Amino acid sequence: MTELLSERAARAAMVEVGRRLYARGLVNGGEGNLSCRLGPRRLLCTPTGVNKGFLTEDMLVVTDFGGEPQSLRAPSSELLLHLACYEERSDCLAVVHAHPPHAVALTLCGEDLVPCMPEAITALGDVPTARYATPGTAKVADAARPHLREAECVLLERHGALAMGMGLRALFDACDKMEMLEGVARVQLLASLKRPVAPLSEMERRILAEQRRVARERLAKPPRPWERDR
Ligand code: 13P
Image 1 (spheres, rainbow, N blue to C red):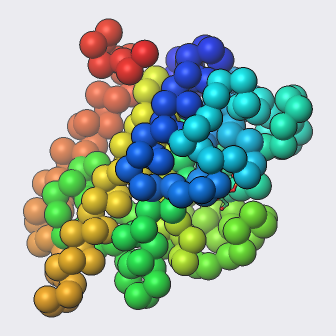
Image 2 (image 1 turned 120 degrees about the horizontal axis):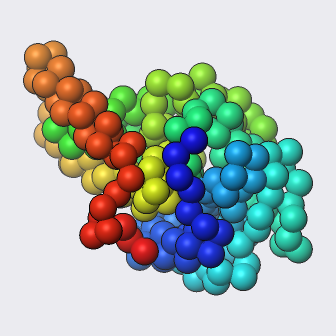
């Protein structure tokens, strides 16, 4: 497994990412949750029912892969969704679940995220939609699981989206993907008011997919000092 953040750095990063998600309107009130790997079977995650824009480092919950909390607060009600990501992907080091409004609106219209702009391909890759499941139940993880090997970002019908983070900046990586996903969804939704949105050509998608492959290889290498958030 790639090098992991220390628990101290992970706590600081999680507080900052929660703040960014809230500031960008990707979570409101008690919505959304975050987690990151601290070890092969140990996670740091957000507590349930709090506003993720105003986290403090001491509220965060350490849990094992059985979902057994090692802190006083109860972990997120979507912990099983996060665990499914780590179980399916050894390269996944962090998970962000948020409720990006334009992305959710697309799912309400029965639309998928279309690979219609370069960023949708280079930054996100394929973004499938998992069928609706009641939030906070094991069914959310069951609905997302079939997509997790192939995709790092998944829309959750009528509910939100999840993004996986890789590398030492994993939490920030997942947050960036969530922000990007919402941006692409917003543009797609705006454009679809005028006419149906077409994907980029097959050939252009292949070129961009290759750019993505090269960028991901770079990400797997340790970041240089100026590339670290902390
Ligand atoms: P938690 O506060 O339990 O993490 O739940 C928020 C949420 O978004 C549920 O889908």
